[in-house]
Length: 167
Image 1 (cartoon, rainbow, N blue to C red):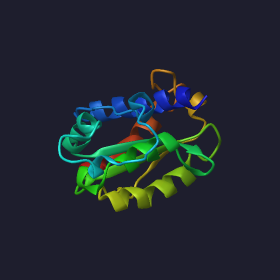
Image 2 (cartoon, rainbow, N blue to C red):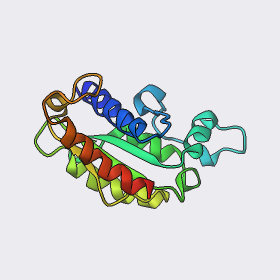
Image 3 (cartoon, helix red, strand yellow):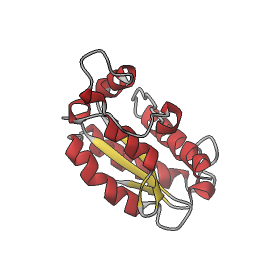
Image 4 (cartoon, rainbow, N blue to C red):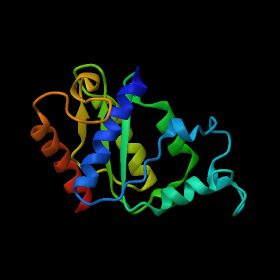
């Protein structure tokens, strides 16, 4: 259920970022399939972490767009697990944009609110504008296009958050 929505929202944001000239490296925590955290990346000696390649990809980013579903009024557990694997040295001094979604009417706003202090602690401060997608399964198609006639509104909504992140 949620994976179908996640790819819709992820594809939508990837498209919106590309429209503004950004190269996008999608890191999907479910696809990365990190084990439940027992030893974070930064606890290994240099070169010994099994997650070095992912750490390198994450550190190379100039900004982060965190797309999260809402689970029990909180950010998605796969995203939280991924973030917990890496310390602030991976994410620091870069902006982030929070994008949340749900199948309900609130678009994951509680998950977004819960993600804000985590990203701040990691040093990738979230911009004030957030993007919330209610009824993501109805608003966006499986390839991330707007399902209704609101494409201009959704594009403008996404552009506001992206513009703050670019600043």
